[in-house]
Length: 357
Ligand code: RAM
Image 1 (tube, protein in one colour):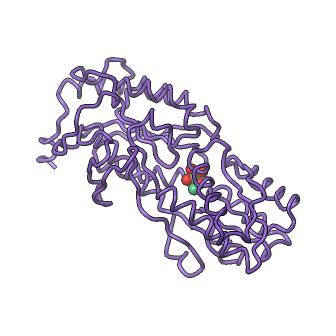
Image 2 (cartoon, protein in one colour):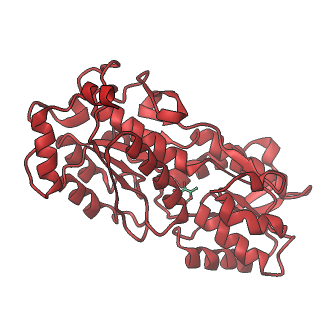
Image 3 (spheres, rainbow, N blue to C red):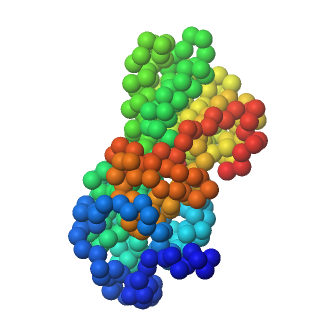
């Protein structure tokens, strides 16, 4: 611990200003830096020590989503390991501009790193770029912002992998004759869901998917009630629907609740991306046969280490930059500043009890 502390690269002056910032002061934290954030980033120094005392703030899509809680729990654990200051703020709804005022406050508080799941790729950009001009590193996770306004994106799995898996699960569960399928998504502007749906559509255009017909993409806005109503609405409009594919943990749980308590149970499959703890009962009662996800806590954890590596000058977010993310091991930044956590896991009645998140 002592050796680690001695290796820390924070200057006495910046410790002082960090302390002032913690009291709501406005003094800039690192007077020796020049330039406009990562836009003018110097080259990476792979040997730079990770700084301690970093202020790492999480801004998930929304606070009242169990998925965000699991994500940020991993972030909190990592920030603790890094001996930093953890903070979580966020809106109660996932609408496009709901995060802007939070970003502005985080700038005033002189955070070192903002870890954000963007509700809209562009609405958050002006504020994120202001943050970068104030030397704050921006890590997107879960749902990316435009790459013009962040340093690194922590992607839960490859976008192609997730989209392909959604299409494959729909095909498997549509039955021998196939038929109509519908997507129940999150908000219409969510970067992550939209990119997965785009891949799904490409897959569905392939000959092996010719027996599936995507009839509708509905949006439950990652609101439980609205998602439930949208699932109900889908069945009213398309009574012959074979599969509801919900690429959102909120959507799949609401769709399973509706289908599981209706006469459609056993006739209409529900699949997509879900939290094992929320989906367990629907897997056990036969409403849901298979769904997928990654461990959200690991995304939050990886994001903290990426943010610390950026803020310590170990990496700049350029392709090929390497850093170590604690217990998760070594990662390399890929094209477009993207770091991929790993492949998603598929959950069925056979393995769901092995997972607790
Ligand atoms: C919801 C959110 C989140 C997404 C998961 C799968 O909780 O939309 O962004 O990654 O579902």
